[in-house]
Amino acid sequence: MLVLTCPYCGVAACETELAPGGEAHLKRFGPGSSDEDFEAYLFLRPNVKGVHFERWRHAMGCGKWFLAARDTATLEVFGTYRAQTSAPPPEIVAAIQAKRPDWSLT
Image 1 (tube, rainbow, N blue to C red):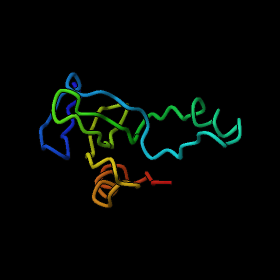
Image 2: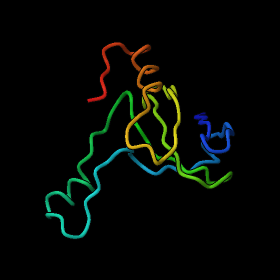
Image 3: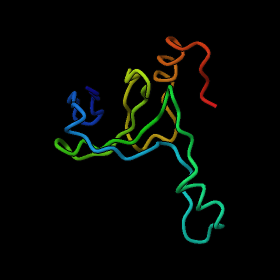
Image 4: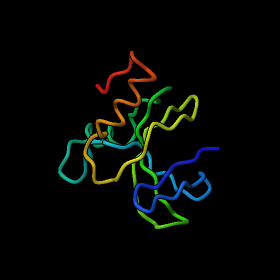
């Protein structure tokens, strides 16, 4: 079972207490954008096997959105951090690189 620690309230919550919110750190396109940009934002996403950054909501707890870095193949969690963060914190990037030396953020 997937267990993520909410960075706001500090509770280690299992996936049944959380609501998934999709991929994190996306450039969002909306009104005024081209059809191609909006289509790419909605539908054209990589289906990563490995390290992935996701949005989660602590639905059965504090109710706040947060971000998580995890491996989609093994469910290994590298860390969670606040939703207002525009890029993964250095300590999470370091934790990923310590276990996966060939991985890079780009």
